[in-house]
Image 1 (cartoon, rainbow, N blue to C red):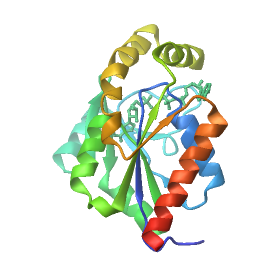
Image 2: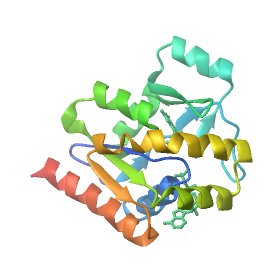
Image 3: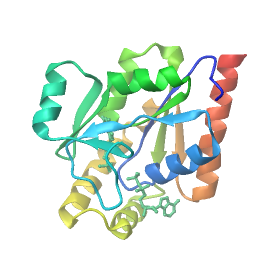
Image 4: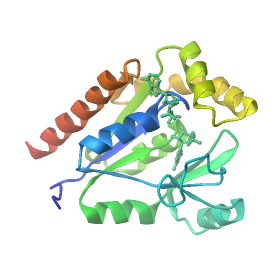
Length: 195
Ligand code: ADP
Ligand code: 5GP
């Protein structure tokens, strides 16, 4: 297994329903140097999601205990549920010598940007083509209740206000084009660390 000489952390955010998970899965299938950071969450699993692959699904009590123990590098309340990246998960991935992909919201991303050294992370914000398309994607995904979809849409405009703070912005219009753009960013940023 190849080890990256200086592993990077790729912080990726997007309003829910933009297609971030789809894009990350596609990019990871083509780029063996990436490893996905599995977050802890108190939200219930969606159909098809697996504990220990998509998330570590935990109770609110367990999550609270982890906050008290300072087990998270970042955590946030997103759409009424708790989400966090454990320090243990980051060290596990660093030991593998892979570049780490963090799929986290704008609050968590801000915390990571403040905590990690500037030359160790790269931030990427994925935008939907427009809000109507975002609504359509949330509805056709068919995995959130109408109330959950409304919460996500309401938050989307505020979240998009953070996009200029990220190093890169990608519009997820055509999936293949957006996947290539993401892979190009990974390759370009690695080249910089290896120069
Ligand atoms: P997120 O992780 O950002 O919440 P998902 O990856 O679950 O979003 O994608 C939301 C829905 O939109 C899914 O049904 C997915 O298949 C669809 N989707 C993702 N990217 C595109 C795209 N470029 N064009 C059309 N549909 C897309
Ligand atoms: P979903 O419930 O749709 O999987 O994710 C909802 C939101 O929570 C997304 O914006 C996603 O990026 C974010 N998220 C997932 N894991 C984490 C995490 O560990 N920390 C933070 N801050 N946000 C997360």
